Structures are given as C-alpha cells and as structure tokens.
Image (cartoon, rainbow, N blue to C red; front, top):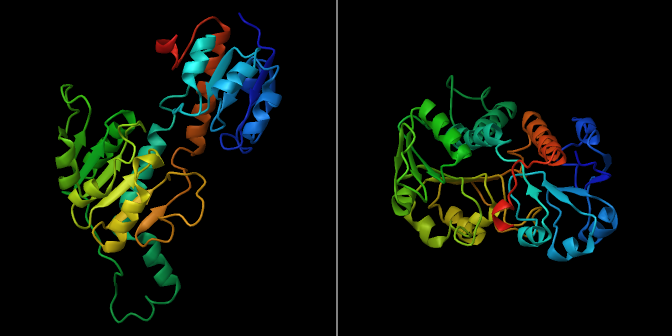
Length: 325
C-alpha cells in the first residue's frame, strides 16, 4: 500500500462548510484543508503534496510542472474541466472524479423548477401574506395560470444517468417524454421516445438540458434553437452555464416568446453584474445548488475517499485520464 505523506484540499468549503466530517479523508494521510485557494496560491500550498483534491480551483499544465511530488489528483465533482488532463497524463498522474453522486438531487431540482412554473407557489403565498386573500370576494383566486403537467411534453437533451432520472419523474407525473441522444441506436428506456434535435426543440413544453459542455454543445441554446421552441415553453438548465447563449435567452424571455427559464448555472460563476439574465422576468436563477443537498455532498465525500483508498491500494476508481496515458 502506498503511504500518502500529504493531502491538500484546495477548496473544501462548498463540499463541507462544517456539516460533514473530513475524518475519513484524514485517515488516508496528513490532511490540510483550505476553504478556498487563489490560482496564484496553488503551487505554494501544494509543493510537498502527493495528493491534491480540487473542486473548481484550476490545475494547469504549468501547475503540474511546478509540483514534482504530486502523484494523484482527485476532483470533488463530476466535471473535470478545471484540470489539464493531458498534462496529468504526461506525468502519469491519475485524475479521479466523483461520478453519479448528485443524480437524485439534480433531478429533484429540475422538478422544483417545473413545479415553480406550473403553480407559482411563492407568488401566491406572498399575495396571501400581503392580505389579498382576505380581501378577495371569492373563496379562491390565482395570479398566474395553474398548469397541469400530465399530458405535457418534457424534452430531455442528453439521456445519461441524471436525464434518465428526470425522465422517470416525468413519467410519474403523466408527462410525454422525448429525448435527444448522440446514439439513437441504443434502445430507449421505457416510456421515452428518441427524437432528433429539431423535433426536441419544437415539441417540448419543458426542455431540460443534461449534456456535458463541449465544443459541440457550447451555446447549444442559441437564438435559432430558441426560435424553434413553442411559444410559452420553459427551458431548464442544471448542467453547465455555457450550454446557453445568455443574451439570446434574455431576448427570448423579454420578447415573451419563451414562457420561462429555470437556471441553476450561469456562463460565469459567480456572475459579474450586469449579467444578461439577472432581473429578467420569468427567469428563475439559483446559485448552482442542485448538487448541494447534504446527502449528495456526503456521497461525494464517500466517493472521494474510496477513490483515494483504491489508489493507495494499487488500483484506480473513476480515473478519467486512463485513455490518455
């Protein structure tokens, strides 16, 4: 078994702001946890580390060259775009991520957005607290259309593990489920219909994005594709902000063509103001929290520890650089 002398966590606050324990990770070696690390602090803090764990702090090619002791990188997330994987592979350093830890929480958030737009619960609660119900001549009223999800079409762009969970939830609500996949030759899950991209945009009442951010999918949601969508349709993005052209989305919402957008991610995080979508009517934005339930973060911690222990024992789990070495 390899002995890890030093483990450095560069940005541990979002994973564990104090409600989880680092004890299991600490059993793997001498552990130092930083809440946050600026890019110009990475080399200094990791100079003697054999293991570096990062969530959003970049590890560049220059960083790898400057850290001769480094032997293992763990990513405290599923996406690994903050790490120069080719540079890691050249050094023979495995980069192991935490796949599938947040599937349930993210799928749940998608339906949080759907139900928000279907019922406008907060709007109605605010009106009651403001006294409007007490002044009403009838036993009830509504300030926004109440929408029944049964029979509506839920489109899913990218039917991976999270997309499949979203599909199952949609089926439980009685929705029609259509999906776009890069490999339509594989059998569609029960209740799901494969469609091409154009049909996905044209037929969806609600469109949820569940694909990785790549050169091909960057600004997948652009002015042309938004124009294909139904008047009043709702876009939901819990994937990556770069999937959406934010200026085009803002224009579609402001024109009234799109009925709403539920976004847990933005192109730049945290945003810099003015942001094209902040303040736009019918645009609900949450601060990248779909993954952040306590249960989800505990799974992330557990996967991170299991990955590291596997490496210490001479094996590898969730190694995203295997094909590059």
